Structures are given as C-alpha cells and as structure tokens.
Amino acid sequence: MTAKSHGSLRVVGLGPGPSAWLTEEASQALATAEHVLGYQTYLSRLPELAGKTLHGSDNGDELERARHALALAAEGAHVVIVSGGDPGVFGMAAAVFEAIEQGPAALRSLDIAVVPGVTAMLAAAARLGAPLGNDFCTLNLSDNLKPWATIEKRLSLAAQADFVLALYNPASKARTEQVHAAFDVLRRHRTPSAIVVFAKAVGRPDEELLVTTLGAADPAVADMRTLILVGAASTRRIERPLGPPWVYTPRRSIEAP
Amino acid sequence: MTAKSHGSLRVVGLGPGPSAWLTEEASQALATAEHVLGYQTYLSRLPELAGKTLHGSDNGDELERARHALALAAEGAHVVIVSGGDPGVFGMAAAVFEAIEQGPAALRSLDIAVVPGVTAMLAAAARLGAPLGNDFCTLNLSDNLKPWATIEKRLSLAAQADFVLALYNPASKARTEQVHAAFDVLRRHRTPSAIVVFAKAVGRPDEELLVTTLGAADPAVADMRTLILVGAASTRRIERPLGPPWVYTPRRSIEAP
Image (cartoon, rainbow over the protein chains, first blue to last red):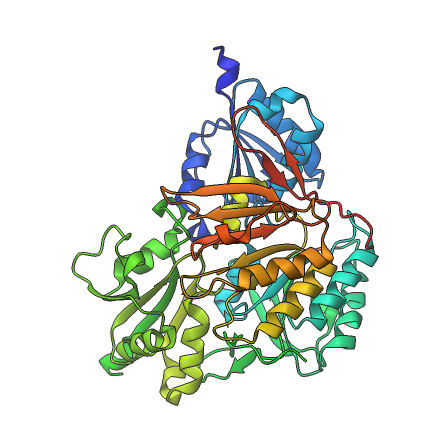
C-alpha cells in the first residue's frame, strides 16, 4: 500500500447555525482534517482550524469544489468538505457523487463518507413548535439546475395532497421572480388561511421568524437565507403571552378531500 | 416569582443511532435535566443519567407522556422528553404541542423549547450517498392516526410528481399490510427500475442497507425499525469495488413528464 491509499473525504454537515447544532461526529471529522473546503462564510464560523489548509470559496460552483476535494483525497490527504445544514439536502453531497460518477474509476475506491447534520427545516421547525409533525415535502425553488415546469408540477401536486411544504432557496439577488410564481401556484390549491412561515437565518444572531397566512404573505420578504414553511390544512397556531405563536401540525390528519 | 415559574421542558432529538450523532445542544439539555421521559429503549442508550429521575415507558401513548412532562415542568422541574431522530419528524414534538393546546392556559407561559436532531432519513441518506439530493417527500405510513385514504392520495400524487420518497414507520408487529398497499400505489406511477432502499436500524450495530428496485423489492422485509427510500426517475447508483453501491439523486432534474 502506498500513502495514496490512505486519503479520505468526509462531506460534513455543520447544521444551520451555531456550533451547538454540530454533531460530535462532525466535530471529530473537522478535528482530524488536513484540508477543509467550503464556502468562506462557513469556514469563518468554525472555531478550531489551526494547522489545517483552508480552501474557502466565494462562488457557487459546487461541482468544481467537489472535484478539488476528491483530487486532494486521491493524493492521500484527509479532506473535509463542509456544507451548511445537512450535506444531503441541497448541500454538497450530491455534487460530490456527481463528480465521482463522472470522474476516473479510481475515485470509487476512496474512503468517502457523508456526515449528516441538522438541516434548516428541522431547525426552523424546532423554533416554531412542530410544523413538520405530519407528512411534508421539501423542495428547492431554484431553477438554476432544473426546469421551472418541474418545480411548478411538484408544488401543485404537493399542495393538492395537503403536504406541509418546506421551500429551500426561495430567492437570491439574481433570482427574485420564482418565489412569486410559487405562491401563485400555492394559492390555486390552498385556502388563504393556510399558515405560512418565513424563517430567516435560523440559529444566527439576526434570526427572524414571521408567522403569517397564505392570503397575507408577501413573498418578497424571502431572500437567500430564508426557508419558507407552508402548513397543511390541519396546521395550527397556539398563541402565547410571552412570545410569538407556536405552530404545529397534529399527528392526526383530516380525511383526504 | 415563585419556584413554579422556573420549570422548563426541552423536547430533545437523540438522532437515530450512536451518541456521535447527538448535537451539543442535546447533550447540554440532558446534562441539566432533573427528569427525563421517553421510551425505555432510548433512555437505556443514554450514557450519563446519574442523579436524574427517569420515566421510561414501554407504551406508545405519546400524548400521555407529553402531559406528564408538562405537569412536571409546571411544578417547577427541569424536564427533558427524548425522541429518537428529530422530535419534529414523527417524534414527540407534535404530541407536546397537542397537549399544550388542549391543556390549561398556564402551559402556554412555560419555558418550552424543541432541540432538533438528525432524523432517520438524513442518516440513511448519508450512509447511501445522496439519495435526497433533489426534491423529496416524507411520509408516515402508519394509519393509526390518519385515514389510509389520505396516505394513499399523498403517495400517489408524490409519485406522480417524481419526488424522492422517504417512508417512515412502514410496518409494525400489528400493522403489516400497509407497506404492501403502499408499494401497489407506487408501482402504478413509477417504473420497475426505480431505485428502492430498505434502511434498517441505521447507526445501530445491526444496521442493514438493502439497495434494490421497485420491480424486485419485497415490501415484507420492512419492519418497525426500517426506513424506506424510493428514488426519483433521475436517482442513480454508482457501483464500487469495496462496498455496497452509492445511491444519489443529481441536483439537475429531468423535464416534468
């Protein structure tokens, strides 16, 4: 065996906010890494990176970053590539496996593992109560990598099936129209009283939770750090004297319409 | 202020398996608890519970357990109620908020928080690669608390929309027919080549991952510790020489049919 065979790649979920949402497995993977790749924003949040080679990036080319990480691991290095939230939910994991499938066959023998994390919808749900307490669908509203027709069809059928919806990546600086189009679809299938939550920067110092309804919601409040939750017909709010309302979806569902 | 006003309730996600998947926030909540409630199976996995009052239970009456936890907190105790995985995904959180809504108004002033965790589908996805790399739906196949017609409608529309599916609670000792009925629905809308994974006891010593297809799958292999993943049309497998295949769903979706 040569040194090359000892390389490894861990695709690590950091959770959506503070280090208190990091798992022990994620902390250990970071502690033993020689190279750490990821968005500069995420790297700058990590506490203990002394002695490691950091590869911060400001661009959105996940496939390029995945290839870089795989190349370093193939050369024998212990490599971590970080993802906000969970790497398997609209994070770096899919890009890594795309790069493996498209790359040289030797990559398939590398020591590769994904380290799961708390994805944004779970953190937002925890803050609110239990909005995901019944069946739900999770959609990425970005049409950078898929046709809008696919997103529209999925939104429409998920709304008809009365799933709770968790909508990731509703908008960015360059992409502001999709969230309005998405709400147009939702309004065709759900009543105006359906509960809608805009959860911004959950777990960060500037966290904001806005609980409203489909009838009253202004989709323009969503930005690239916002997760949108849309309740099912059964989703309820509980008012409380000392804080924003709780939002939860009972375990019992009403009969299919 | 009386001592009563100092009670607290934390609804804590333990992740699906080893303590390495526990978050720091969950560890801290357990460390400061005076009372810990939950399934006996989960309590017996926890390492450091000396000096705490444990309330292990073997039955499935989550609402009763939630009421007990709220009553202890209302009396001024620091209470933790544990949930496998994430408490917000078919765990204890919804039961707690049902109990709050149905209980005395004073419960709405209690110090209550949900501590998120790694839910089973994220852990199973991490083991497999990135099967949740595109839009997905999460369904609880148990019809103990909702009509089968609702489950069938949701499965049918989610399959038509080409979501990846994560199916929780496919079967139990007393409930063995639903998973067969669910596969009948899926086979009407998805091709036999669709990738299906039975992920059993992920993160436990007896973990098993079975990667198969909708055409070849035998739903009878699912039990109460199994999570089922059903791929989208675009979900792929990558064979590798030293282990089971990777399974991932590319970020690019194909056009809506």
